[in-house]
Image 1 (spheres, rainbow, N blue to C red):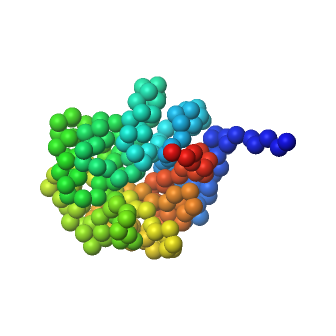
Image 2 (image 1 turned 30 degrees about the vertical axis):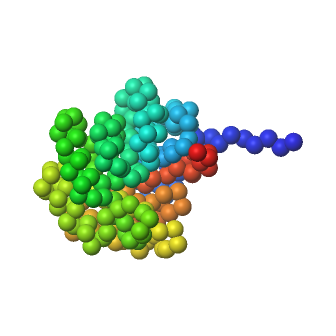
Image 3 (image 1 turned 180 degrees about the vertical axis):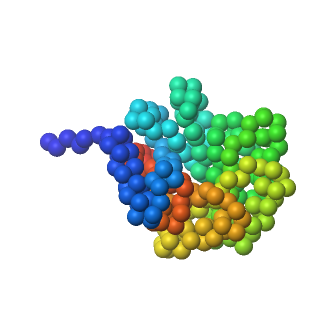
Length: 228
């Protein structure tokens, strides 16, 4: 009977870090410019602990409820842990998101911007924000339309004084991601935003070529997601 070796999070992290460094050097960039956000969606806290034991500190979660159940204890044990929200945020979860996350990558509409500004003022905590752009204009996907991105950036950053640091996108599965990465880069350039969260397990090397400062990698680190 063949035994299946458990996925080694430490080994996978080392491989992904190596690929990031190679892609950055190939693009003439310093590998240190690219932050790896390890996405633990649906994986138990033990898998995140394995990544922490391997020295990793930056993580992403898609759902506020899952992060709320998993990360307070992990953060208590590792005060330098940085947690990114990378899934859609409902306005009724904004209070919890502001309290728990260090970066909110999915700011995508005026109502949410206003709610986040109110909650940040109330809590005295200001997690960094990325504007999510729906570069493929997919109706089922969150994100502001590219044509409306400049206005949302102006509202969030200039009118509401939110700490907007960059942009985020998730390209359509059936389209060339480079086109979407190029579009996101251009929107960031004209708005003077320095950070780009783009690229996942299948395309992060391409994203790095187009200037990604943050890549969101789950499966290549933690293995296939368990069922809900």
